[in-house]
Length: 113
Image 1: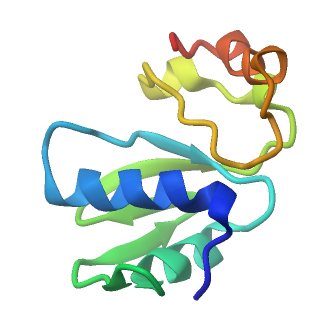
Image 2 (image 1 turned 90 degrees about the vertical axis):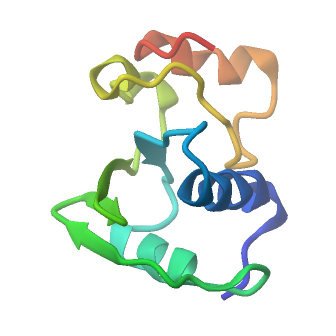
């Protein structure tokens, strides 16, 4: 599958977190796709090749190699409960919230940075 350029940072961070323990992805927000398609895109990434690990969808969450990743489909980042997920950093890669003012909406949900 093809990944839009705005989404490339998320794909790269996801790939890194799967291979290394220094980054732990606890949640993802994508207002444009649902969890099953997100799992498909991760499994069959056109840049990184086919993912060799295990990916499942449980409810609205992704489970990647046994790690649960909360999956949100919010158009307003202020509605995402980042604090509930334990998220510290949020990587804004939708291509929608590209100004500092718009990206700050993530802080309403409890993200630190």
